[in-house]
Image (cartoon, rainbow, N blue to C red; front, top):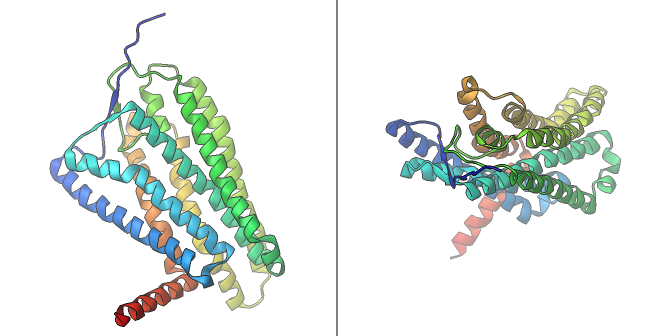
Length: 313
C-alpha cells in the first residue's frame, strides 16, 4: 500500500503558445467549425425532408452528417474556449467524458462507413435485387448496429480507465483528451489498457476495415466488365466519394492510434488529430455534396421552396 494523491486537472498544451498565433487559430477553427455545422445540418435536413432522397444511400449519408457534426462538437468548442480564454486546464472527469464521446462517435463512423460500402456493393453488383436486399429494415438495423457496437466499446474503454490513477501534474500534448494521451501520463501501469485497446479496438477496426474494402474488390471487377465508358464512369462516380472519405478517415485514425508516439512525433500527431477531429467532418459533406447531382438538385429545390414561401409573405 502506498499513499497516492490524485490530481483533479490536466493541462492541455494546445496547438500554440504565441498569443497572435492563438488568435489566428481561433478565427480559423471557428470558421471551420461553423462550416462543419452548417454543411452537415443542411445535408441532414435535406435527407430528412426531400422525398427524392429517401433511399438507402442518402439514409446512410444523413447518419454520417449527424455523426460528423456530433464528432466535431466533442473537441471544437473546448478548443475554441481554450484559445479565447487562454485556459489550458481540464478536469479529469471532463477529460474522461471527452474520451468517451470522441471514441463513441468515431467508432460509429467507422462501422457506418462499412455499411455504406456494402450499400455501394449491392447497388453496383446486384442492382436488380437492390430494393429487396437494402430495405429500410436492413438499413436501420445496420445503422443501429454501428451505434450500439461503437458506444458499447467506448463504454468498456472508459470502465478500464477507472483502474488508472493520475498522481502528478501532467500536460496532454494535444488540444483534446484521447486514450493514447492518458496512457502517457498515468501513474498506473497501462499495459492492460493498451493490450485491450489493440486487441478489442484493433480487432474491430480491422474487421470494419476489411468489411469496407473487400466489397470494392467485387465492385471494381463489376465496373471493369461494363463495356461503355459512360457506364463505367457513372458506376465509379457512385463510389468515388465514399472511397475518398474512407481513405482520409482511416489514414488519420491509423496514425493517431497505431503509430508509436514519441516526443519527436508530437507535432505530427497534433496535425493528424486536427485532420481527424476538425477537418474530416468538414470535408465529408463537401466531398459528397459537390460530387452528388441528386443532393445538389435537392438543395436547389429547397432553395426555390424557401423563395416561394418568402414571396408569399
